[in-house]
Length: 112
Length: 114
Image (tube, rainbow over all chains, first blue to last red; front, top):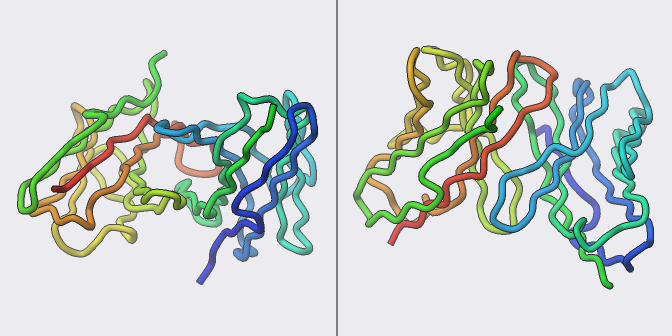
């Protein structure tokens, strides 16, 4: 079935380095994508979103890239900080009604 | 503006009891979504509701689970005759309109069935 998945389950980076978290999606009808950050014991926190009519969107220290040709989404975090340590999920909305389909998550660990 | 409020944060039930999870959406939001998350896994969609209407319940188990979002009051996710496999974190999200907008999540209810 349609699904959203991630390539790397765990990513370990040095503080100050840039992080890249990848996500593959298979629903070609998806036109809206969101990255969420989830810290231990908390709910998902919205980071950044992108619509299918764009291929790049930047926020504060974060950039999302969308490659519709290969159905690939990535989240780039610049100058990664210890507070960025969390599990990151990509989610896509290929249906009406904002029913998000989540990937399995990537755990980002930032080493001081 | 308070965020999505869920209660209780933690709920312990014995097998066979009923669990009631509550979700108050953000002010001005009329769309509510329930998700379930097992440890070390992603969130799985369960049900999408608007006031007094179930829009999509394709992710809900066929038995023991039900959800409502009444005209007044919070949305309720109800699990009857809980089993150990129901132990999970249940998250609620809300949005102001139905399509292609960000959904804001609550802090979740962690259900433990003993």
